[in-house]
Amino acid sequence: MEQKRSYQLLDKKTLNKSYIRWMMYNLVATSFEFLEAFGFALSMEPIAKRLYKDDPEAQKAMLKRHSVFYNTEPQIGSLINGVVVGLEEQRALGKEEIDDEFVNGLKVGLMGPLAGIGDSMIPGMLIPILLSIGMGLSENGSILGPIFYIVAYNTIIMLGSRFLFFKGYELGAESVDTFVGEKAQQITQAFSVLGMIVIGGVAASYVSLKLPIVLKFSSAKIDIQQILDGIFPNLLPLVLVLVSWYLMAKKGVSALKLIGLYFVTAFGGVGIAYLIQTMF
Image (cartoon, rainbow, N blue to C red):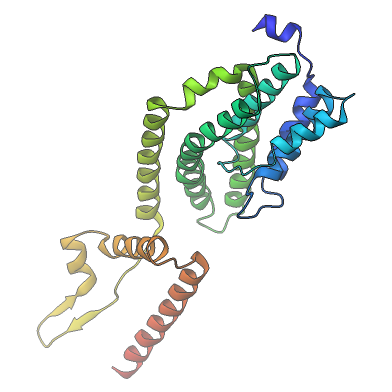
């Protein structure tokens, strides 16, 4: 590693500029044809200018090379940016075996496994954990909840993705063996299971649905909610979560439409309960 760094072309300032561009603009100018390609190319621009400062044509070729279709989870995927930067540096130093096909093949090979790991870790685990803590802090109307989430999320994401970028730069092509193959699949499955456990815990703690239906007879009173709790505690919240998942995953209902549907249903249910109480 020391031998490589003794003749490197890139300095810390250039590397930081590349990372910041990816972190802030990874979803710039997205389309179904290119997705994150232009965000990736934008992050490579400072690298191209540094490596080929006296060769505009080589700069154009490098940016064109990184303007093809590209898509992965942006935060964990910053490791790919670091790997590619390291490879481009070695290419500029004369490594003939690092050609267009090698660099693009490595990008394509890494973006799938890292997308699986990233989607399991960030939206599947990290966000639910931080939201559950923030919701607990805001339970009595405190502003600490959203402040905690904003600060904690951005701190973890910024520091974590920056670490991965520079670790990828250090590893170069060696990272392929670590993040592609059976090990990557095991990591993805482990985080997926952990993410499902976290989401289940959050749903059980914060999703509330009760049936305030009490049937009164001359000599007895039947509480429907109490009977349901005796059979299966929190059965209705579980059904609500499963129905929400089915509508979003299988029927393509958006989250906003689902929120609107539940709002109308809750409003109507409260109104019906109020009318029944006033009539009887």
